[in-house]
Length: 272
Image (cartoon, rainbow, N blue to C red; front, side):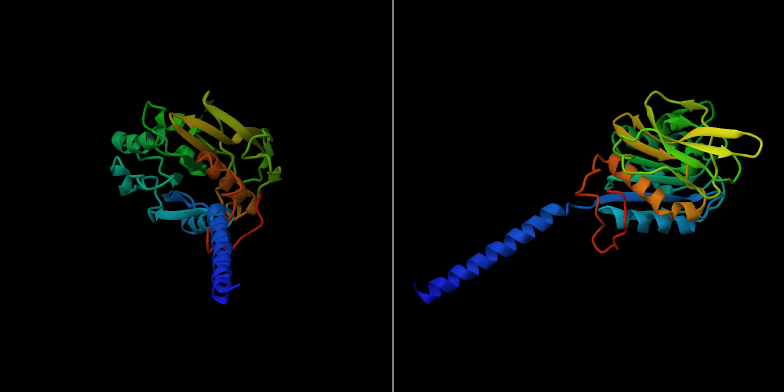
């Protein structure tokens, strides 16, 4: 056989093998989801928690987290991007981690809600449930899925997953937090599906409320948890596993292709 022909055949074989391996790698690692994390407002260490969330999510999922943070520590923390109707353009999911209970501008809140009503997935964390309380309206609570108006003392919360077959929770285990705030439930909307309850002994009584759930808001899938007041909780692997799985569920991407770290992020043991 002609040596040149053999050389060309070997070169072509090597090219095919490399190209096949590259194609498989590209197929196994889909394009990252674009997530927008919005933090700021009253009563929490958002400056630290925003980084714990970004690092924790990117280490667990093929998600690129972009941060928008306000240093305003009042209940009137405001985010200019919400003044625009297309504020969420370019993002696949938004994590609301604001504590802005006294922002009650109707158009501002409507801009936020319209994006999610039209199909933008959402993750709501802790004080987001107490934000944007328009007088006489429950628009924000319909989006969140549960209406809450108060919380208990800083004491441990026993978390029990009550829907073990749900995609978000089926790999998660019950756990007890450090000192945390247990939010009450005034109303559970029909579109909400409870996933976990929290039990807290306040010293004078025992409170028991839904703490994690999913919701359908128009075309948008929504995941929410009232857990996450303190930074030690936000940085807890069990919390980050739960939030990450909820985020992927909201995007309908809770699968092995996305349950892998963002390129360049350090992999950590996480629920698979």
